[in-house]
Image (cartoon, rainbow, N blue to C red):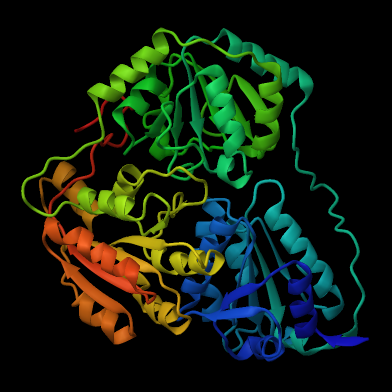
Amino acid sequence: MKKSGAQILVDSLREQGVDTIFGYPGGAVLPIYDALYDADIRHILTRHEQGAAHAADGYARASGRPGVCLATSGPGATNLVTGIANAYMDSIPLVAFTGQVVTSQLGKDSFQEADITGITLPITKHNYLVKDVRELARVIKEAFYIATTGRPGPVLVDIPKDVSSAQTEYEDPGPVNLPGYHPVLEPPAEQLNRAAEAIARAERPVIYAGGGVVYSGAHRELRRFAELILAPVATTLMGLGGFPGDHPLSLGMLGMHGSKYANFAVCECDLLIAVGVRFDDRVTGKLESFASQARIMHIDIDPAEIGKNVRVDIPLVGDVKRVLSALIERLEAKLPGAWQEKIKTWKKEYPITYEENGHLKPQQVIREIYRVTKGQARITTEVGQHQMWAAHYYTYTRPRTFISSGGLGTMGFGLPAAIGVQVACPDEIVFDIAGDGSIQMNIQELATAVNYDLPVKVAIMDNGYLGMVRQWQELFYNRRYSYSELVNPDFVKLAEAYGAVGMRVEKAADVRPALEQALATSRPVLIDFVIEREENVLPFVPPGESLDRMLG
C-alpha cells in the first residue's frame, strides 16, 4: 500500500506510542500538518517553537516517555535549538522533527533554509537528514530507540518537503539494527564485588545522586541502598525527588547553592558514591579540594562521563537501577555510628533558613506553596534565584516532581515546561515558580495554556531585578547593578489579557489566601508576588572556592 512520507511519519509516531506533539506549522511542514489533521495524535500549538521544545521536554521529564516537537524549516528549526540544547545537557529523551526545503534546493541558500543537522550536531545524541522517503520509517524508529536507550538525549529528524510529500510502498522497517551502538547495562561481576568491598570498609560514606537516578526509575533502589549502608544522600538539582527530601538520611542539594551540611559531608567523607551524575562545576567547586579525603565510586550508564571531570577510583558503567540492585545483593546492613551522629549535628547547627524582616520573602512564598499543595504538586522553574529557593524550600519526596533546566540554565524554560507537564499529568497540580525576568522570555505561552484549558499556576518572585545577576553584582562588583534592574509590565493585566487569572500579592498575610484561590480555579493563574528586592540565595560557594568555603 502506498503512503506519503507525512502519513508514514504519523503512523510511525502512533507505533511508538506517541499521544502528543508540541509544534508550530510552516510551509515546509504543511504535508505533515495535513496528515495530522485527521490523526488521533493530539497536537498542542505553542506560540513559539522554543516553547514547543521546552513543553516536549517537560512532558518527557514528567512522564518518562519521549517528548516530541515539530517545527518548520529555517527560523522554525533554529528556534528549537535552545530547547534541544537544554534537553541534551540534562539527558532528556526528545525527538524533534523539522521541515526542510526540497532536496533539489539543499545547500543553495533557499528561502527558509538552514542546515539544522549541522547546527544541532553538537547538541543532539544523533540527527538525520532524510533524503529518500523509503528510509523515513526506519529513521523514525531508530530516532526513538536512540533517544530512549542508554543515556537518554535528543534526536533530530530533518525532513525535506518533497520527502514528506512523496509516495512509496510502505514496508515495516523491522527491528532496529545499529552496529556499534550497544549501551552497557551492567558492569562485570568483579567490578561489582570490588565496589561492594569498598562500601563495606567505608566509615564515612556519602551518596551523591543525580538525574540518572530519576531517569532510570531507580528511586526505590537508591532508598534501599542508602538505608542498608546508612549513607547520607546529597542530590544535584536534577536529582531532587530521586531520594525523599524528608528522609532522615537526606542532605538536600549540594554544591554552589547547596546546604552547608551536604557540602561539609562531601568534604569529610571517605567514600563518595556518585550515582547518575556528571560532576558539574556547580557541584564540585574547586576540583582540587572536591571530596579530597575520599575514594570516588562513579555509577553511570555513559562511559564518557567516567573520569571526565574528576578522578574515579571505582568505575561502574551501567544502568543505575541495575547496578544498585546488584550492589544491594552483595551488601550487609550497617549499624549507626559516629558518622551518622556527626551528620545529625551538622543538620541541627546549619539549617536551611532565612531572616524575616517584615517584607514578603520568596522563601516564605515557596514554603507556603508546599503547605497548600501538601507537597504533592509538580514544580517547574525558570532559571535564577527563584530556582534555588524552589530547590531548598519545597520538599520533594517523589521523582519527576521537580522539573528545571539544570545544565544549560535556560531562562524561559519553566512556563512551557509546565504546559508539557500538565499535558502529561492532567489530574495533578502544576506550579511554575518563576522570576520576573525569566518569565518574560516565554510568557506568550500563557496563550497556549488558556487555549487548551491547562490549569497551570505561575508564581512570579518579582523583585524588579535579574536576581541572580544582581546578587553576583552585589558580591563581586561592588553593587554596580549594570543593566540588571527591570522595568516590568503589569503582570496581572498581562495575564488577564491572555485570558488567564491575574493576581498580585504584596503582604505575607495574603500569600496563603491567594494560593488557595488559585488552586480553587480550573483556569491558568498567574500570581505576581512582590518580594524583598535584594534578597540573596544562601548558602553560596563563590566560584572557584572549595565547598566548605560558603557565604551565609
